[in-house]
Length: 119
Image (tube, rainbow, N blue to C red):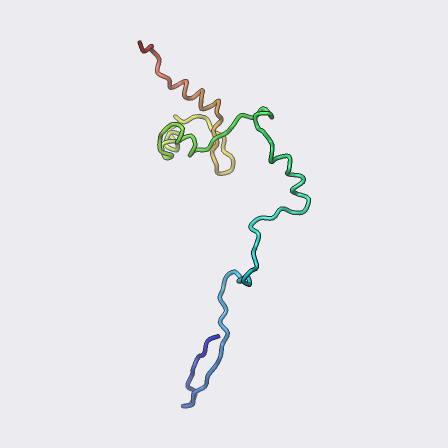
């Protein structure tokens, strides 16, 4: 609460106005909020995904742009530049994310392998 003093017609009046903050409501001290909660029964339905091995299912691993750049030792921007010029490995676009299959990366690298023997 804040005291505000106003002069009306020469006399002083004091008003106590409650001040409320806009935005998210505050929680009382000691009240902890869970960040994520699955619906009831959902954890049982998703339990099989926790131990899922993609290679057992016949799926090959996919890596993102950052991992590919780190693997190749180039900046992330270089991967995007290569994509614009058509020189990057083939990628899957999943929503707004790019994913590269390990086999596509290996094939792409083999195409860029310099021939010749080093003796």
